[in-house]
Length: 144
Image 1 (tube, rainbow, N blue to C red):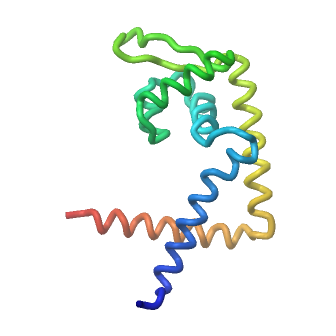
Image 2: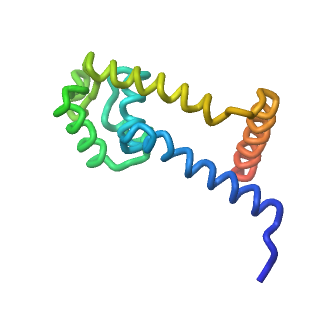
């Protein structure tokens, strides 16, 4: 059995933090992470195709359709065929959905501020710089 390296510890900690963060806010507000992401995405981007939602959320088309239909049934979103290409469906928030998504955005900002309590701006910048470097290294490794 080999001993865990510093690199192992770094990526284990990073991966654990990312996994936990993806779900924590959704649990905080009592929604699924995909539902939160969809509401916020539609709020920020406006009317969006199901295809784009599938890519951004990283879920299959059936799941996107189900989520949009749930939001529609609750009066938070509407759907229509894309007038430029009726093979595609567009989704957009209703005024009620805009209010819910705006509230989520404000709650999320306050939540993030609480999570960073005790972490200085300098420490945040160091972490951002390290993450940018790691991402650049990933890009370098993927080049032929």
